[in-house]
Image (cartoon, rainbow, N blue to C red; front, side):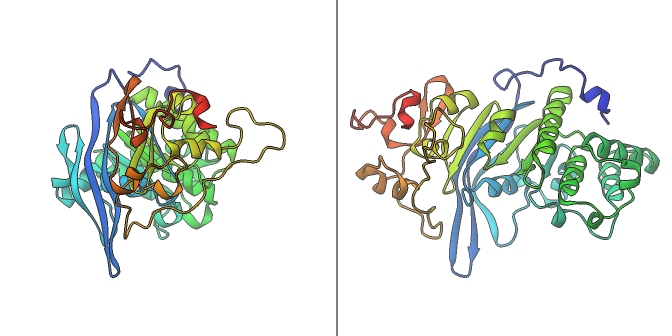
Length: 358
């Protein structure tokens, strides 16, 4: 296991996403929950690619499909959820065709996930140290003594004080923030190729948040772990991720580099998120934040056209009738909006300038 000294050493320079080999690709991923009241179409045609060592953010409000995307990748969808279409390609192999036994060998080893609620993810009848040891011994041929030493070192890496003593304690003896850090230690124990972090800093104060984000960046730099950071906090994702995917209503709205997304948002939904972000741009003293009016779409009966149409100040008639495609734009960007179409009214076309957010 990587030591704290190795993690905090100067980075040797991980390859950028455009230079590194592709690690993960989603192609047309659609996921539904088949409930007694009907089919909830939680994901509809999600496409994106992730390269080795890359930090990739997924943002959007609650109910946009961020966590369902992660659970679909991991093969951990709760009943009655099911992937209905598409592919999840991990190093070129479609994970959707794998057996549960084969997926269990992958999860925790090459593919790891930090869940939102650490209390429900940790077993209350085993010590925290024993749970990390179990992960290590399942995927690594090491003795129990060595696994225990690595577990203690993992707790030390995530900033838990007195890790030797804490490793012998149970989850209920940890605070919420400490449980979250223990989950991070468990996820990083086998130095995975891909770490999916679903709201990993929710239960942490700002000081520990910064430590955890630094730790994930250090893991990425030292051993090449790719990170998918799922969050509704645009401030957090801007600190960690090179590229950002914006989701809404179970679909991709926009994809861009972090810098381009904040400087030149190209989708009305992204613009709305940024207008509601404290500290974004230049605001006059006393100027109020601008919320996005309305509510997210009902995914039991999703809109025929764009999912954002009922809340969009720039909606066209076609937005209600047909879903937009993901338009390929300069600098490798994508945006799912009819305003990028050559046939859209020139006065409403989205410009490549920060002033378009106004």
